[in-house]
Length: 218
Ligand code: PCA
Image (cartoon, rainbow, N blue to C red; front, side, top):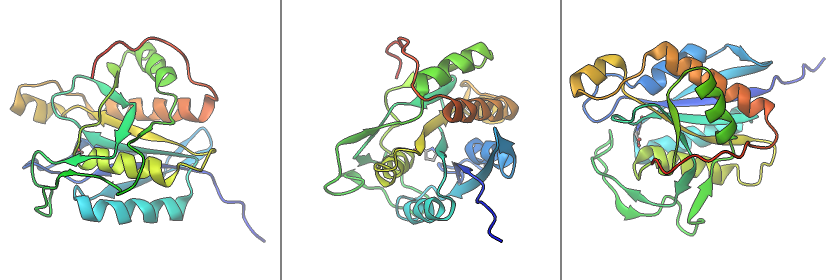
């Protein structure tokens, strides 16, 4: 007898980078690994913060899970809330070397690819739900030009013809401990996890995004 494949939500986080010992993006998605959100099983994936190694790992996971929703989550130290990223650009301009020592400057993510892709997550609807839950959040117009933007771009490129898969990227602030060390904003792990769960629920339940003004914050 063949068992119908459960529909999966893929959540990717990253390994620590830039001299930090933890990456709260992986800590948050790991908590949700194996849980069920609105009838969908969550599979968590830890991606290396490396330009070269991150993409094959992402592509393998997409092939393995064929997810309904795929969200990559990364740390953006200094940001004050959950950043719902709107756009991935076909550009790498690394400020610091990655974990393998590579520091590409002004090169495309994929040669010949479109200049940019938009998130296919209902980011405005998610923003409203996060605000309703009292979680600081905003729409961000740039995911940077480092490994996160590369993974976001490659994710959207890989899924560009999959109309039934919603995908995007979410940046999160420092953990409270990191925030104290950097004297910048942080967010408790439980709040990040709750935010991700809300974003996934909204993505699974929303067919057309809400239209609310998001302001100009980047
Ligand atoms: N943040 C980095 C890469 C890995 C991560 O968590 C970024 O924003 O590019």
